[in-house]
Length: 376
Ligand SMILES: [Zn+2]
Image (cartoon, rainbow, N blue to C red):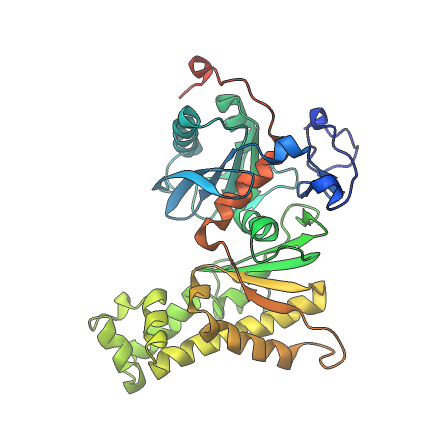
């Protein structure tokens, strides 16, 4: 892609926006997250509705998002099986976009994908749930849709949404941790998403916390997400139940006697009802969360950690032990300010909202798409 700034690997906003170097808050303009330098968008562009798409392991959700981060309308469908070709996934995206564009005056599309997105946000290098290996997604979709398209890692998109509209507002150095089946991570620094040199920053879930620990699908052992994630919670709960431990009896009864029916939400529900074993399991996950956050604080020194994802629904059953472990493990404790650890505010929709908002940076006042030119 063209890089007028002459620095490789950096996304470039269209010159037509005439982006300046103004700082936060000037004349009510907000900074924008696509680039290392602080950028602002004209107030009119900030209000344009855009489409955000969240492509996860099981479902694809598309939504029209307004300038305040509100979802005006959303559609969902199943994620095509990973055996399907990239074209099939593109078809799904195109259908969703065209359906929404029929009813809304939208100006750009942002894709938040579970996978590695390269530094100029055009290719998906690898996606665990899809048949994307070096897939030139942005250019393929731009070509078919005739819309400006932005592709972003889903954790980055969620962190951006929390920074813009949620629990990260006003924080100059924010780290977000998404506890789902694994751990998603992202950093928003001085009003931009810190993607790293190759677009791969924030893979905190694969920091090794236990030498020779549990095997991880990434190929290594002892990764953080093997100890603090939905999968870790379920693995531990099932192991106890399968071992016919008496402490797991209430949990097993709740799952109808079927070990495999024990899920993360079921453990959380049991903990909320006061089941001591379920409380203990979440306490362990929270403790590992706090240890990992202390490691991240040593590296990044953020002002705030925002904790999202399905497991964070456990609330203080997770965050209270995380805060304790964080304080106990933090380097320089007692002699330094401590980062806040807070719940995410935007729930499951953060990825979609963030992707749509990042797309605003490339939105343009759009003439109506010529449907006949769009190859479905
Ligand atoms: Zn790993």
